[in-house]
Image (cartoon, rainbow, N blue to C red):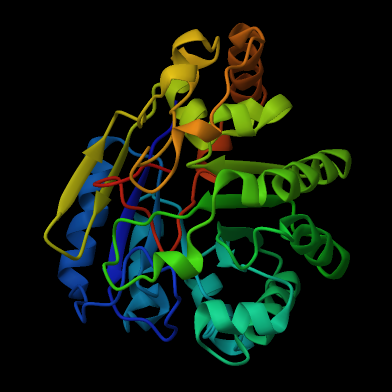
Length: 335
C-alpha cells in the first residue's frame, strides 16, 4: 500500500473552467507553508506528493518547492492545465528541479469544445505544446479528463486523438463531474447523466485496453463499468485500504480520507459488487438511482485483479492515483 499527499499551493487560475471543483479564491501558500506540508507528508510516511490548485504553476517558488521535496525523498508531480508548461524553457526548469510526472487536463480533442469548457481560447493548443515538451524532456505525462455534458458523447474520440498524436501517453483518468464544490456552476449546462456517457466511456476503455494503455475512472458506479470494475479509483482504494490526505487552501484546511463510499440505491442491495463499489455520488440529489442496475458477477475476480496489479507493480499507486477535476476534494468526494 502506498499513499500520496496532495498540496493545494495556489488557488489562483489562468483558466475559468465551467466545471471547476476548486475555484479560485486568491489564496497562495508561502514557501514556508508549502515546505511544512511536505515535511508533514514525510512524517506521515507518505510516498510522494501531488501539487495542485487552482493552477499550481502560478506558485512563484515552484522550482524551489519541487527541489525541496526531492531532497526530502518525496517525488512530486503536478496536475496542470498546461498553459505555462507549453513554454519549453519553463517546463525544463521544473524538470531540472526534480519534476518527473505531469497530469495534463485535456477534456476534448475538439478545439471549440475544449475552449468553451476552459473559457480560454487556444487552451487545447497549449496542451498540445505541453505534450510536445514532455516528449522532448523524457518525463511522464498522464491525461485527466472531466466527464461533462459537452464531452460525454466523444470520450472515445479523445483518447484515440491523444494516442495518435502523442503515443507516449500511456495512462488516462476520467473524473465524473463533482457538482458540489462550485456554487456558481451551471449544472444544467455541464452535469451529465450516466446514460449520457456510458457508451462512449466503454468504447474508450475497451480501445485503450486493446492498445495496452491503462486508465482509472472515478465517481462512476461499477454497474456502468462492466468488465473494467478493477479500474474504478474508489474500488481500488477500498480493496487496497488506502488513504489520502489533502492540505487545502480554504476552510477545509487538512482533510485525511480513509472512507471511499457514496450512496447506495435499492438495486445495490442485490448487487454482488456492492461491498467493493463506492455507489452513486450525490444519489437522488444530482444523480438518479434509477440509472443503477445490479451486477451478478463474482466480485472476487475484481479483487484478485487489483491485488495482482499491486503485486506486479508495487509503485502503481504513486504513478497512477493522481486524479481530480482541478485537484481533488476528499472533503466532498474521493478520487
